[in-house]
Image (tube, rainbow, N blue to C red; front, side, top):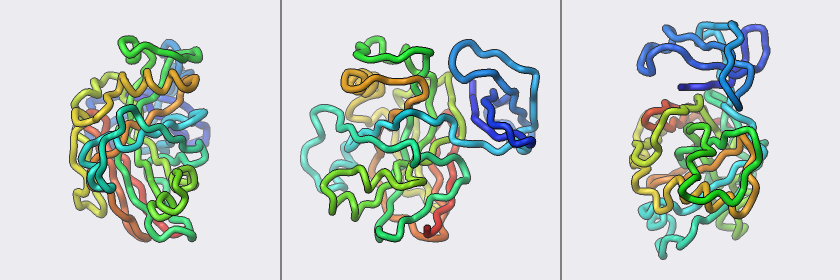
Length: 263
């Protein structure tokens, strides 16, 4: 099931289930409103043609938990060294989140802003959770979406920690929707810049897999329904400049596309 957050033609923000075959033309599909993202799915009877609504970031979480250096080839391209023995956690603020087709704004105080295509995990359920055993980690997953962990690489090097470099407004595109019926163990992930492939890998190459990440994070902090865990980016990261367009595609989910503009 694919669930999107959207603005209706009347301007109301809602959640809805996208109807139609996954590979059907965009214009041939509809979106059926549901009364809540969490808990049992209940349809309200309201329905729109998909092109008539504006898709938003699929969730507005209390926090976005990022995982650094979680593909071996990316570890090498970022300066080598050993892969982290445990997941390397950082946070991005909710104010960094934008949706599909929203603009990534390049800050004036950075000269090297880079794309990082990733698979994102959306926490589900209706209660707060922590200390989740690895063998039960997938029980708290609502679904998955595509993400771009945009990073001001020069600020990351200068600061020695990652909060500013990864926390600018618009530095966490998410979308285009949540796919609930997906096995994250071996999915193709690809990033294109102006149509040219820059990242091309698979989630089977994650150093720490999705259940491990969920369990590890939950032992450090309480997870709230709607929270997002970014699973890490593969090799091929690189700079974006004003006027370019970046797209992150994840197998079984779809493509998240954002234009890049100077702030």
